[in-house]
Image (cartoon, rainbow, N blue to C red):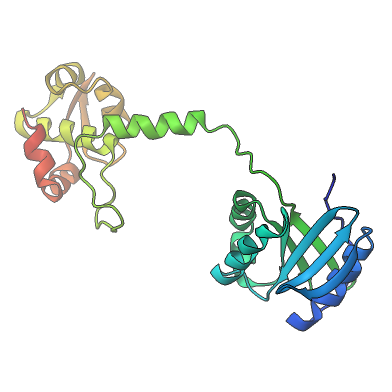
Length: 238
């Protein structure tokens, strides 16, 4: 049975004023509506469908838990909030995604629009994520290419996260620090980093200087940065 809702005009100021416009909104969709039934803010019936709306002036853990708890009564649960709450303004897409993950709908009320309106940002239903194969492959690629576990989860680092790419660049820098200007092909064979030529050419961190065709040395920036990564510079020196 189709449960999607549509836009109508309204005006509201306070949480207590959310109910009348949403009641009217639902009634225009063919629902019979009553408030405060078994701790549910709004209960709407149409044929055999039970629709429940939990009203709040903000989106927080409390309202999410209430909405999840209402799933014991119906599969069609909405959260109703004003459209101008700061969290929604900053994170609209992420909040809608969260609602879809939870299988909960989201209704917003536009309080200061000249005509005023109720808008449904998402309807309840099973979440169907987009294909993530490419991103999964990127994640696994980084996981398996990274040497050891050099970062501490949940902490900020002064110089940045140690990625597999940074480890490879450090391996090259450590080699150049020890051996001086060298051809990219020789470095690649010595340290086992097939993408050495591309890393030297792109020079993302400014650590390398081109001395000739395919020949690179460590730059002053590289010499300054290498001591910041002492464990890796020692590990990769050959």
